[in-house]
Length: 95
Image 1: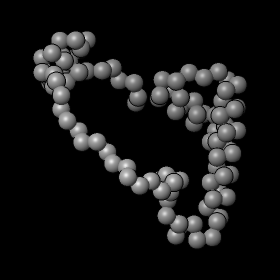
Image 2: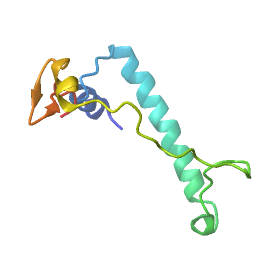
Image 3: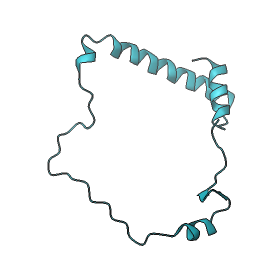
């Protein structure tokens, strides 16, 4: 990852960084890429099932979703700064 690519991505995300922060970020990307190479070189890594949680959990269930005190669309839109087609309109933050 080079500095110009990082600047372009930061600009698209409307994120400002100091010049010295780009060096730190490039160093961190180098470490991440080296770690990915190490992981990629593990034999039969493609046969290992991805881990989603490190512990087996029993008796875990999600609660049932219940609609309570549902708001009407007019009540929602009256407090929005801007709306379009019955949706709250927000400013664009990412290209």
